[in-house]
Length: 449
Image 1 (cartoon, rainbow, N blue to C red):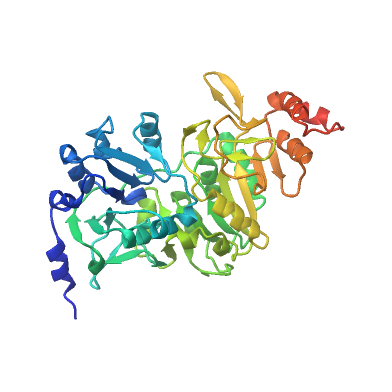
Image 2 (cartoon, rainbow, N blue to C red):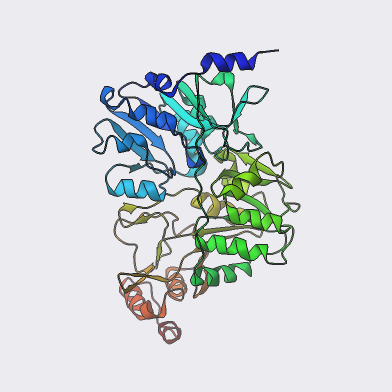
């Protein structure tokens, strides 16, 4: 019987010793989500004056990396993210964070086929009796990242929950080069509080969810509102197959609304690829056989998503234009989040038998006292097209729900204008006329009224 404890001790070093492996010019990948490394980041920051041109990749970190605290001019470290958190968005505004575009379900293949990784360093759970560490509530691309890295350093944190799964959720001591130990808090990210408009939009979508539906909820107050409404509803036999697991899902499950019995694949299992939340979420996921974390190339694969019938995907966006192009990640050229898995779930749920993909937004918002429309004639110059018009299906604002599939440009313009705040509809009609996508007919007065 192998002595895994002896292997562990032979690889156990201090953080300062572990980061000595990093050389100038290296590509280094940090842990992401709730698995962001802390003591290794601090140790690498302490080597600032020894290093040049070290490129660091991560994803949705919730605290400023120490390497950027010590190197505000980016002379030693260059940092980029696959999906910006609020912290990383502010760093990007300061020129300290760059965005790496990607489709989330493809990310493991980027590591396998395209990327160089000199050093991987990420948090894990303590090792079990079989010599395995668990990646915690962030399987995501960890397995592919570690497989590609020339050197793998794990930061063992007893606060990480052990998340059961079956695909890419563990790493064995034999695959690890160095072990460091830490005891740092896991990031706590409470769910956003829904606004009155969020609740109005959520109430409309609730009418589209039926017994046995399989759900994916995105980020923000509106999906959280749906989760809370489901917990208080009389729906039954719901399933969950989602990129992100959050606090409101715990409420849905504990209320008895979710059991996964009508799923076509992973029956009875709650499938996800990462989780962020409060201790309510982390405690629920820890060693829970009802849940199954898996790498994102499985969870977000549109072909996998489509295998569950009546799949309802619910995501947010920033703005939409009259052609049906959806921007969900930038404000003009300013990157604010990322493509993430929206395209994966829009396509996968559309391919599902009885599936419905929803993209939601408030029709307008206030900025410095001015009312601004989220429905634009064309997207704001520089805005990223997250979901192309050919893939956009159901759009929702507090004004209603429309389905763009199969509609011509004039039909789309009419439908999308019906979702706009009434204060902007006449202006949008004029823009549609000027762009040649408006047909004169009797709906003009009702839309502009």
